[in-house]
Amino acid sequence: MKVSTRAMALIELSTAAPSDIDGILALQDENQLEHGGLLSARLPRAWFEAALNDLPVIVARRSERVVGYLVTASREATHNVPVIAAMRARIPGHWTLTFMAPYALLPMKEGMASPP
Picture 1: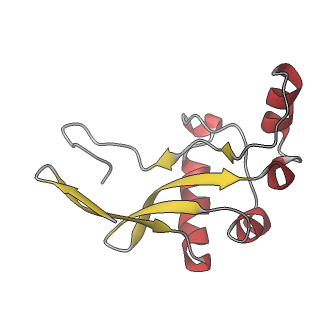
Picture 2 (picture 1 turned 90 degrees about the horizontal axis):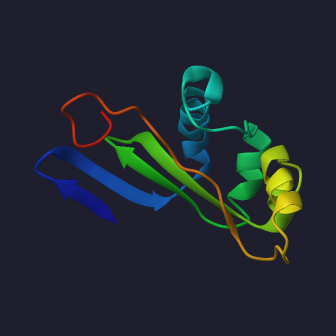
């Protein structure tokens, strides 16, 4: 799927491939709390490699560069992620549904309709 408006360059959305992992890891790092972002978990390369075989990981690309991602993952894939384990402990219920992790995007520049 391709998304475009007059205010932004063409963004392509697709299922992630192994070749996208470097870009995902870079965005993940940029969006950690210590860098002013909102991500509270740092998932390693091996986790993303396995996640690609679990449920879809969606990437947004602009000019072949990963500029955003969204992770969907099963309970089994996320049981060792501390923030998700804490949520499960605080929210009662049967957690068999797919868990959708936060997305990460390149920072937006002032006056832009989307990340660079």
